[in-house]
Picture (cartoon, rainbow, N blue to C red):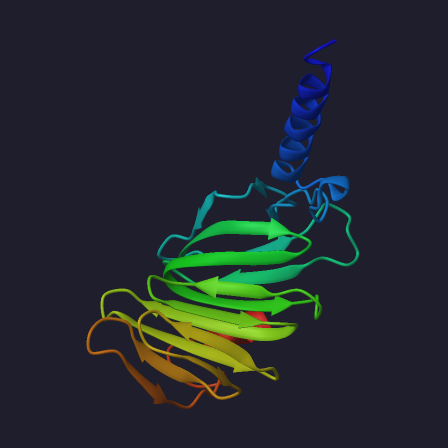
Length: 197
């Protein structure tokens, strides 16, 4: 009986720490939010952390959310020779890391962030459409918000909001230049015709 208060306190403390680690609301967390993953047009499932890539002549469509979910979180279209990693795919945040290539995305949830990252650039929108092109061989990223505002964070540089397309050179010296975007012209016109349709 002499050590009963210490034992009770230790059990309560351990329970609280474990509860916080797993996000339980009673322990001060925001609750468990399972990862939903992504599905391609053929029904293939991609889990959080998986790499999705397209070959030289392939394109792919991904739907982030659970199967049969009417209110999907986001849709992604990947152009030829594109490689991405699904970093987070839960109802509070969707984050995709683009290794190389071109992605067009539509975020359906205006309450929670949708983010595309590269080595040094992080582009976030809250609803709307965003295209990001990672020219890994040129160390340049094009961020193209479409009918929305993108919050762009450049590593070791600055944070800014933009409604206009920008080209960002990722390595030193970092440069941010305004650019133009016309989905119906240029080398990617057929990709945007397929994705935006």
